[in-house]
Amino acid sequence: ETGVTQTPRHLVMGMTNKKSLKCEQHLGHNAMYWYKQSAKKPLELMFVYNFKEQTENNSVPSRFSPECPNSSHLFLHLHTLQPEDSALYLCASSQDDSGWDYGYTFGSGTRLTVV
Amino acid sequence: QQPVQSPQAVILREGEDAVINCSSSKALYSVHWYRQKHGEAPVFLMILLKGGEQKGHEKISASFNEKKQQSSLYLTASQLSYSGTYFCGTEPLRAGGTSYGKLTFGQGTILTVHP
Image (cartoon, rainbow over all chains, first blue to last red; front, side, top):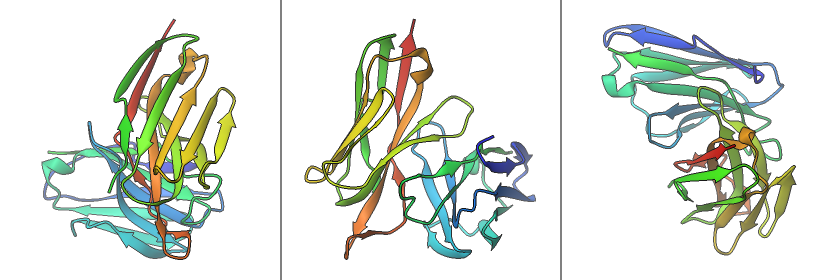
């Protein structure tokens, strides 16, 4: 375990389903992030939350909806996804949104398959 | 805009050295380096904040050339445990010398170390 816990580890969902990914950290970090990792593509930043406020939405389609109820928890709500959304979704946290000195701590990810 | 890493892949024998490069088209606030093993979360290696800064972590070190907007990761006397995909992440520089808090990753360099 890295200090950032993601659940579930694997998720298969149909295109009409609604599901949520959960991320939890107890490192005392104030910034949390969602990244998408597809095969043979770089890690893509999706959302940034700093002190529970969303500070970045990297042109992510509205079928992905983040929620950050407190500094320790981050959710990614999914609905009417497309097969091309199948990927590894990684959550990360850092002390603040500069990631200064200690970098980002990543979770192990949720492997999402959309059928 | 994402940084560009080179080479895309490196194959080494134990004890050999390698250099991985990371180039950006933008002025940078910082460069991060991460290693990801198959099926695991990316793990933070180091961050470089100042132009010309060099940092070391056991036999892994890195440099940051601010003028060239480049960073290099040096792996010396490689070990089997060094195998994995290495990512650089860059934070663009904002007016006033701070960052946007938006880490963008390169496409990764696959490093394989053989006995």
